Length: 102
Image (cartoon, rainbow, N blue to C red; front, side, top):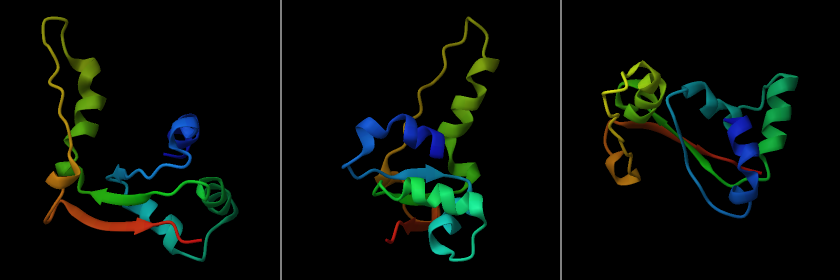
């Protein structure tokens, strides 16, 4: 996540965006005050961006599955292009969200 956000920082600085992830431990990056040095550095590097982190259960995160399995397809198969919409993440799909608090 950190590498991707920094790579696209030119587009993301000054805009609001949402990070959807099935990695629940990322939620604690901005909530916990007890962090090791590496996590503090990550937190400081991400402090310039305004975004919430939304946890999506791994079984409901079809985009991640589709992206990680595209290389397994034969040349004859055409991969489906799944899309995820924030409105489709209601109910039990979204477990928890967090936002950066300065």
